[in-house]
Length: 235
Image (cartoon, rainbow, N blue to C red; front, side):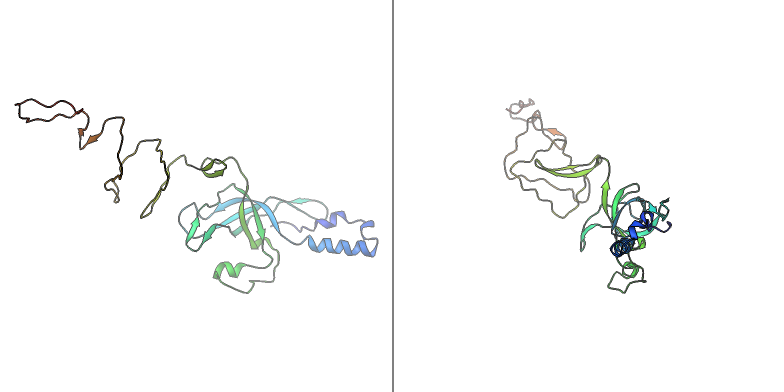
């Protein structure tokens, strides 16, 4: 871990403690310097990889280094077993696990939360420590490059972009819109939910339609009454 971090001592001068007021101010600043609120961190490892699983934990590297009384800079060590925030309510969630290399903001709880993490219920503090990096919780990414997979909300509407595929699994998928545009080929899958298609209105097709291997537009009929001839194409 890091060296002692009371950076207030670097500004200690005879003037700074020359009066009763300045001495009180110095003591207040020294006390406040030991408090931890939030700090930018870098994600070093993650237990989860985006799968359907309970919320995992991280190891993180605090990015703002410490200063000792002589002004020397000390890098913090890695903080392990850090919970991270997920948008979740009950069994409903947006699964978006942090990834190694993410730079985010973490908050430091004012008491030891180790017993809460292990019991997942109301518990007494695990120790007397206060504002300690061991009781850190990772909130969200704050510095990152432009995403290549995203859900975007702006004035023009909502955009979903994926370089791979978008999978929807549900007993029923309902789309309610006056116009639906499909810019791509439509294929009936071969999974367990494959079935028939039903339309309540008419259907206009600019190309041909093939039904069970037979063209609707160019097929012919044999066995007509005039003999062995065939009818013409549909008109």
